Image (cartoon, rainbow, N blue to C red; front, top):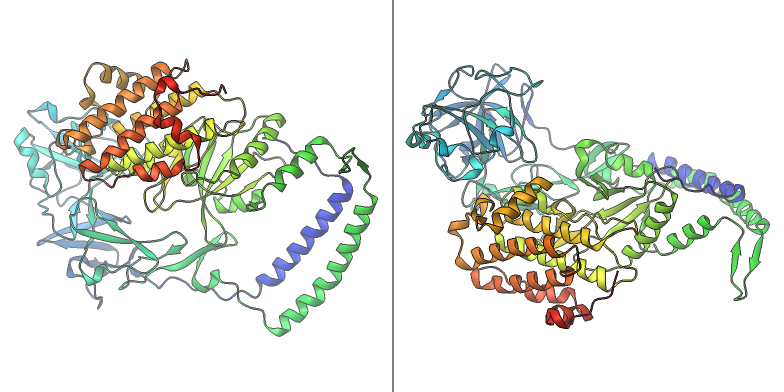
Length: 637
């Protein structure tokens, strides 16, 4: 942790009284809040809460018949599709987990034991991992798939305390080489497989749950699919032409007009509440009178005490006529630091602790050498990114405070907006960013982001990093750029967070990080150091297609995109080979990525070149990027 100096005794008294006044005001006003408005009650079946579009067959819901469920013995749910009945194990926001129709403890199930046919409402999800038995064609098995921890019967451990044993030929449905959306499991018969078992592995984890996950959605042109004004429409992954509704940040509910829609959501006293509870009502006359009677004497007393403390503080006059107190230099630094934050909010550590549920691991989004970023919800319902910055000593604390001041003054469309910060005594510095609605690039890559968006995003990021490095003094370096620190707004524009805020940073490290980022958009996954070495070896040996993200369908891409994938992979190689000795820098990388992005329009993408050039408006850097590499002189950093 990074300690901060305690203020003088006189200022402490004034600060204590001010806090007392604020706490009194908060206590008195809190009793006037309206009663909470809860989400509409949901249908129940045992431990299941059933939300739109699903409904019980006994209800008179307007949902499509396809979403009717049967509740047996008041505890067990069944879904009926195409004259088949499936027992529901668990609900997800985008699907539901169902059991096999056959005995769950057979070693394997016949390929025809799950006769599921895709329709406009349901499809087998990409998140399923399949174990295939006695396959004649071993090329079906995928390396790395068996690293998932799969529990259940089929000859493995019954509990979650240890991993399973041999799971046969492991195949993730996200691979698409043998299985495509709309297929059932009988398609594996052509590889000579005799049976299967299935687990769903949620995104971002490697722990499977036994069963088959079915994705659900509603046809786009259906009236039942109309979204609430405070919801956004999300395309289904495995069901063509169908959508789901998801409430925007700060709202909760099922998102559908015919469901319970979206109610404003916020946190009060550590609990999530909805609707009117998030609005502060006006006080009635009687309560205002009581409030005024209590606060008026306290305000007068506080003002007198503050004036007395101010008059007693010794000051000295400099040769320029400016006044400074005799407090330690760190206090002067703190005052200067806060003075630059006229448009940002000063948070307390407790506020951010409540927003992130005590900085729980469940709120953690990404972690690296600059610190950890958490997802949080402020009391007013605003969703934020909370970056707990690594800080080892007092010198770093002062460096970080100066860098936050510097960074917050930069206005750039690809830089996530800093909402506020926290410099509480005894805690690491914390920076609070806005939360872009489309989440992180890391998450989007797992969902299968198209190539056009990937190139546009890294071009924007490289342009921002070049601008911060060469048009700011002192230079601002990220020092840990990666897909987990890049967030995306509603237009999939990059919003960079998580800057390393210590001064002792190196540009060669930045170039290596950029190389890793470029490999991430090519491979679709995070790259550990050993993976980076292997990927670069394959690129240099002409085996690029072996590492390309399967969701990009490399051999089905237009020629222009296959060439671009090769160019980005080659650029990653040069960042590693020449970035360390200064022969290849951030401006060079930004120039090449800008050129690739400008050529995207020929393959059916939205052309982003003009938007990226706007990034450098009124900047000499745009001219530098457009120049020949041999004619550029870059300042040393």
